[in-house]
Length: 309
Image (tube, rainbow, N blue to C red; front, side, top):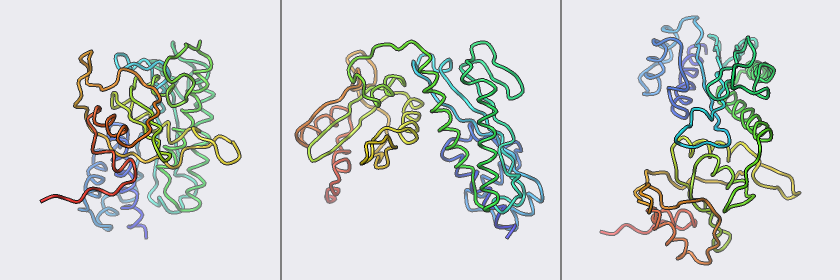
């Protein structure tokens, strides 16, 4: 069973790196990274993984980043909230580890200023992301990991999602502390505010038969953080009128833009706003203008056209 656990832990790390990138999920030991790579390629057996790791823990640092309001692609580094989470996975993980498989520490930085887990706020940091917030986040992560260990279940993805939720809440509090600027176009629509915060342009389409389609374009970092925010924050209401998370969103596709705007940028749209379209033909024209005409059928839930010979 221990052999299986060791390989399972390596595969969990590999899956996390596949989702968030090896630059944000960093193993402290290069030899362990080689084992993770071999496991992800299906080239590592249970017994070999156990023999190579022995009784050593798997130590990694996971960096989770949230873009704050006011993000612009020209100066993204000054607009980041970032948590660095250090995690130690004992040899028994994901079995019952006695509550020791947890986040050893968490630190938060705001923009270029670090908030160390043992110190106070550096210049440029804000009280809402200071030591008290960091300590609270660490305690919550440790409790989550301890509960998972007692139940013998993997928890890396849970830890990351917990940090994402905490950062989203912190971002909202920071936003409330800042003077609010009037916005144009989409007005008070939450998704429009997010898009503008992240430097994105596009259209929120309300089409025929209840079709809702969102077309976004912008820098990869902005698009990635928009999707995280859409999946982790309350953006909808349930049958009782209470705020809830969107649970029916599907990503139809992602691809580099081939458009050329009037200003010379590779964007089909110069802003973000809502549009009402009465027919699929109109929706198709909008998608074609953005260079993604082939997304119409999957967006509308229609079967693909038969292949032509």
